[in-house]
Length: 449
Image (cartoon, rainbow, N blue to C red; front, side):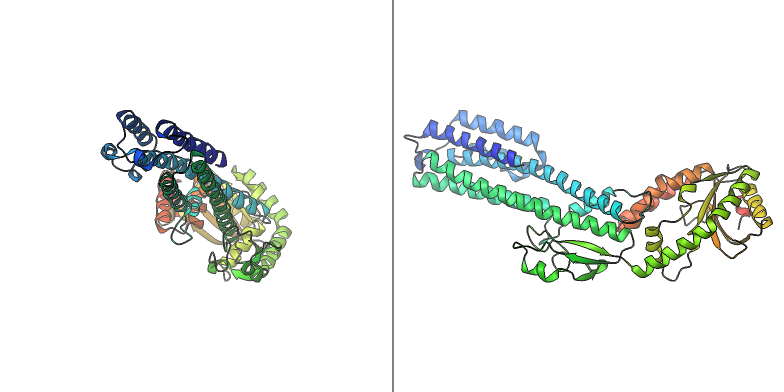
């Protein structure tokens, strides 16, 4: 963007030079000369530039005067309008580049944080709608990054127009005018750098928060970069611990100010994590025997075990579940999936139950989601208890329901889980039901209760 600013500054200087060359004497242009009406050549050139700008930036045309009013402009006003169009064109590029920078900051913050968390599981990705909502958040004085770009741009345009008018009235030389323009451009570059740094800090910290909360982490510790440039407010907050659901940017969550370098680190729920770790250790004690028995049964009845690599719930996933449902019994720390075609799903499920019972297992619960019209998930979820009283989960699926569950449906559910928008959640729910409604229903499925 800095290169764009310098190119823009050079273009404006060149246009002013043309005015001084055409209307000036000894590098000075008299004010009375520039308040005269434009000649037809200048007016036609301005019309051409106006039309080119409107075609290239239809969304910005509203910021300019009505085209038909151009014929009323004098030479100075024509020059000011030309400068205005160049600045608005630059603003459009700046907005597009800034959006890319902020989206990259979000992706980097979220993905690097998720990868850095212990046992986050195999699936996590960027929720595009959440990312866009975060990037466009109006987090300072009801304004977002785009609002601030155009606010700065309009202030710069007004300053440049004032400098041009006052400079001509004072009798400034071309060199004097150019010096002022370059000073304004330096300030503009500084403002742009500050905006990029501060907006990136906001988006990065928001992405980190969303990643931490997705992992079930409830609290965070404030971390300030402690050096001679650290603000007093950030020094005072360093080491303080807050809850994510009470985080407020500018109060107890960064950034606190322009150029803020403060970040946060997670304070994990040690109690939930310790409980999750114990449950996983317990599951490991039974996993080998259960897996062996289930593999043997699947071979006997001709079904296929899927997702064996994920038969153990991850530490972060289980920690999050315990944090969110502290009173719930964790019955799916060890979980399996058996797949059978829709013609034989019910028959194979019943045979599987019989085989398990023949090996000393007891079935403790059955949930047939195919019979539940209020849930887009379709499958048979059963719980079994081993002879030494350990409970695990077995899901029965058709190939199509298994593929949907682990593919598009899971992707939509993850977006649903982290979304704060009621409208988006409703839309995602409708989309999940549409996908689910397209599945072939297994034969005699209503018999499973």
